[in-house]
Image (cartoon, rainbow over the protein chains, first blue to last red):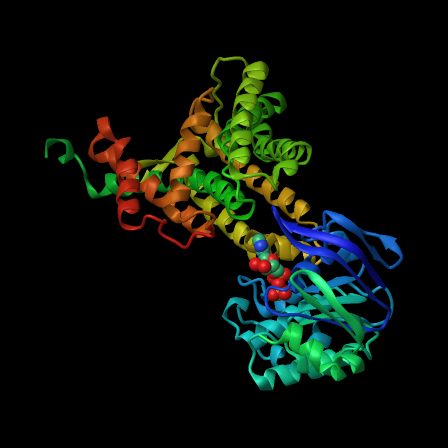
Length: 232
Length: 297
Ligand SMILES: Nc1ncnc2c1ncn2[C@@H]1O[C@H](COP(=O)(O)OP(=O)(O)O)[C@@H](O)[C@H]1O
Ligand SMILES: [Mg+2]
């Protein structure tokens, strides 16, 4: 599905990602774990074309997409849920979903009704301005918004960050259902529990460098590496 | 005291109505400027030039077609021509500058004012033109003993229609909603698969259409001349600033303040009438430096 080959990403002059490579296979949930500031969001932004890498290449669905504009990547089935929520604050919940809607290539796909079935709390606040939502509601909305574009590959950047435990549990449960929907997911998380319960494979990133990669079972077993790179 | 002694209630009412009708044109032009400012974040200095082109094209189209029909068609043709011109400029040049710093964009629109100014000189020469409204809109009718020009009534009726149209456009259409989203977070809109560049093109085009419409509507009320771009762009910017940058209702409020103080100034102290709206602007900015309504900046 996705292959990132040795990318280097910068913000202006500051070099953030160093020779980062990773692979995500069709149907997998792959986690990127790392401390705050490790470069998880930058990696997500690099893949989505928002902060294109200066070196290296990104192969998506068998094609080289390095440097492609974000809207074109989105149209090829990349869905993006940013780390800082970023709902369209001036629009209502329903409008947030409607304006980005893109019909699925085949099958029923996602529409507003289905997103509301998936996240029932959103249904009751359909007409509310998105700027006035709680953190959990905003997170459901950004995920729902990405689903409305009917992605085949979803980038989820710290969806549980700063949310109440009960909301985290609900979100984790719903994210777990994406696999059954046939969605391939790249999930950035600081919350190890969530990542370890959802992922098939995991990467650990620290200071912009990939330090570890392996199956979730191995990562779960390997306390030492987790302590080294993930403890605050 | 002497200067104000001739004011009667009827003349005040009449002057207020005249002021309100002038407000219509100010509102139409400023709302276009504000729209572009709010969504694209570009202070379009050439907005006044497009207004001027709108007026000249109205003249030429009305004369070419002739008769009442000529005038009515010109009211549609002129803004459409201006919108097409702006679309060509946006697709051909402006869109390559969206990622550049503000100063570049400002300089670019300044360059456009020079180009458009010369374009007008080239096509229409440096003589002024004047256009008469069709018979239906000529003359006055009686308003409590004082004459009220029909054309002003026409403007008064049109103003709310344009405001309603703009409201529907920004709140009820997909392009309007996308524009509102892109005004705040264009990156996120792009990440959802929307080509923000085309959203901007549409908004720019609509904003410039409004400049052209303002020019078309003003055409029968004054001489159509070189230099009419300077006056309007200054007024429009002041209106947008006192109303709140990028806020459509702010443009309406600002235009009302500007138009009404201008009209009342003419009544109270004709020699210095021009000062009144500027004093109003200063007063507003002293108390509300960021404008009356919430700015989208
Ligand atoms: N817009 C930016 N400009 C400059 N530096 C940034 C920007 N965003 C993030 N950084 C820096 O890049 C590094 C990685 O940040 P980020 O990718 O957000 O980490 P994470 O998502 O893992 O917390 C941090 O050192 C951060 O300070
Ligand atoms: Mg982050």
